[in-house]
Image (cartoon, rainbow, N blue to C red):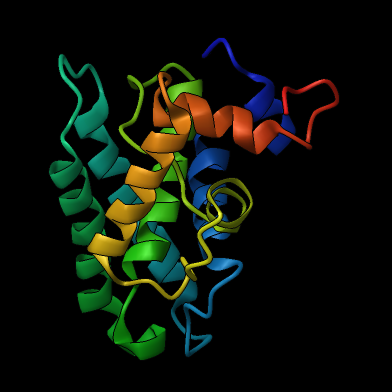
Amino acid sequence: MHTNCRYLQVDGINNEEEAVRWSINAAVQRGKVYCSESGRDQFRDEWKKELRRESQRYRDLATALSDSEHCKIIGGIADRLSYKFAPLLNGGRLRFGTSQKAFNLYLKYLWHFGEITEPPHCPFDAVVLGRKLNIYDAWTQSDDENAYMRWVNAARKKAGTVSIPEWECVAWLCGRVPGAPR
């Protein structure tokens, strides 16, 4: 496990199955993703497969994927699920913002389990965007890769000399764990 296991403890994630399930739950809990009740389980099962399949690219990397490669993967997940499940999805689409939240969170869990090298980005949500970066975009409504890259660049600037994932872990834990750095 990664040396900063407090994150896994606070989130109560103990294994990969919990990680993939919670990554999707966290991505859909704030946004109006569905327009229908029928087919949600099948959609979530397919989303789990997508997250697991795409995360394989991050295992044993000699060099990190570029921002554009990472964005292409996030967009590909959104596009494939949108194509297959359009009638179930609000507006017929799984938005980029929702896709990034699930995928980046899943990668974060895998990183903390020591299953992948450090991911290139972090999950962007209201905590990270609003409370930590003072950006008030609605990540659940965003379907814009350019907006996402503005978030990434703002996080890089805020992180300074540490990586975005390391910065986000401290920022996310702040206020959740007694004695966590502010």
